[in-house]
Image 1 (cartoon, rainbow, N blue to C red):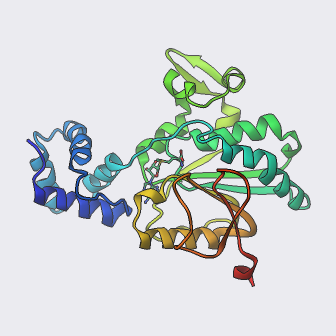
Image 2 (cartoon, rainbow, N blue to C red; image 1 turned 180 degrees about the vertical axis):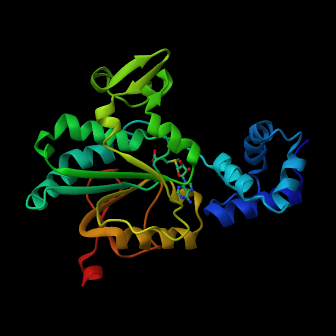
Image 3 (spheres, protein in one colour; image 1 turned 60 degrees about the vertical axis):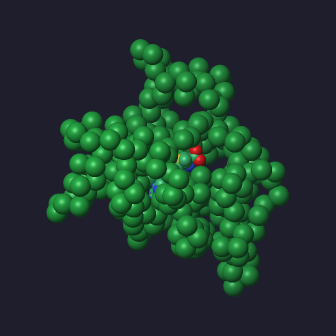
Length: 277
Ligand SMILES: C[S@@+](CC[C@H](N)C(=O)[O-])C[C@H]1O[C@@H](n2cnc3c(N)ncnc32)[C@H](O)[C@@H]1O
């Protein structure tokens, strides 16, 4: 049975209140396609019955699983290429120079999905920045979805996933074939810590970050949530740190404390000097 108007409204409100993800009218088909597998998983016979369960007392664990099911986790290795080129050619060399006394870098991936983004950077650090050996490089990767975090921690990818964006030399060097899948080697897997973090709720205390990767998540939020998340990112960044946004995201008209860096299509920003004063 399909989704009634009032059931869509309830799902829409619950998902928005919990995650900030906006489901505009017209997204009924998306909601339905995500609720069907959830019904099977919950052993519930129909979508209306599932929505009814959301109204019952003690529904919080189901709400968490609903939100998890409603997240869009599209990602790939070295997604969009240019942000990683900017990291390799400009951002990391500048930070390595700036931090040569403390020999520490903190990087946060704020919507890391199944891990391809943090692992792309980790492989690049290992392959191209031997001067970082002996440094402390803390990499924290977070997401609202426990399901993607579990997959990310496992570091196991299908043939299709490694075909998307991963250079052959990295596949050969950093992965082992396990059945039909590819498993990332432990030395790279251990470079990243994965934790659950909801960007639209209060953030835990985070260390000052040199790089914040906040890519392809604000597209799901409304203006107020985008503003709050950008201002949080500004507070967590070191004064000379770098923020990366997705190709369809910008701080323009939301937060004027960022300067865009002139690296083509990298979505790379620094904090304006006037904001720091
Ligand atoms: C499209 S993926 C982006 C992955 C990666 N950053 C990239 O650019 O390839 C968006 C991710 O944002 C996560 N997400 C959605 N709402 C969130 C929230 N409120 N807090 C934290 N993560 C959220 C989703 O679970 C999903 O994994």
